[in-house]
Length: 398
Image 1 (cartoon, rainbow, N blue to C red):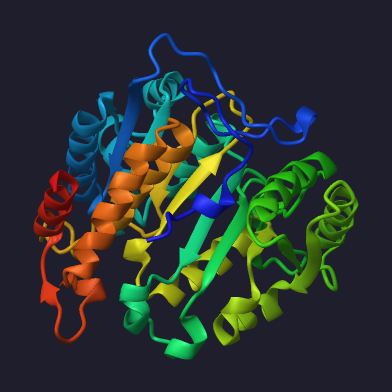
Image 2: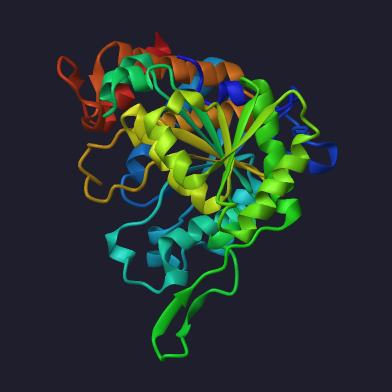
């Protein structure tokens, strides 16, 4: 299996422990920090809610096994986030958790949220913990690959000829836009009606830095970048388009195109193979990346990375949610969490050999016909979360 995100590699790292990030002043070099021992890594685990603890447990076992095989020592430190943090501390992200993440070499997050906390005030819901983590680590770029594996072509709800060979990288801006803009809140209009309002705002530097990440990724792929916005309606999108176009002048080897978000949503389903690399804002990227993920047949197969300038570590997490309806029932698919760990090894910790071992073990499990419920098809062997983890571990040892 081609490594998820492998073709989206940024500039070359060093042989020491490395944090993936973009140095805007140098137009995109990976920022690294020196380490006393490059074979020891401190990882903060954030299992979160729902199925999070189950899939994190499987991923940790995989990391421990691959570490033993590759001569890597991991120091794991587990902290609460989301609903679990609300229950314990009354907030979705505590200062202690954020400090631990900042002090680590990489952060492995599982999932947050659940029905239990849906009635809480907006600023106390689990999702605010995720937004706070991204902001606190200055993780402004979210990288979401959507790769249709040969073994899972039939798992997609779309026709084989539509999805076979799909390999898309969506670069989503994470710390700006309508999720963070102000003013926001509730009020009353001139008629006395209750209203809710949010502000979608981007500055030129915010657009420029995410554009540079996307252009560099496109350079390592097919050299094609599609910028998605809604500039026919929104002023903020007009600024986005102007800045991306201007920044593109520094990357003459990348073919830049523009597409309105409504058309992009349709085209991702209609003809996804036309896309290579996509760059877009926070809310549009949130929607489009979930749509693209379903090309693969299941959210349970897709990892992601959230990176910044390199000052703080990146966050590696599966695309799927916390699935509270199946939590604790050994039904979760742990493969996206394992692949997120592989992504962390390759790009957060500069351990490409260990990453490749994990990815090959996942591929081998699929080749052997093992499937969790979300991937199940005729002729395959249905297994639960723990058993799928055992199969991956067995393939790691073989």
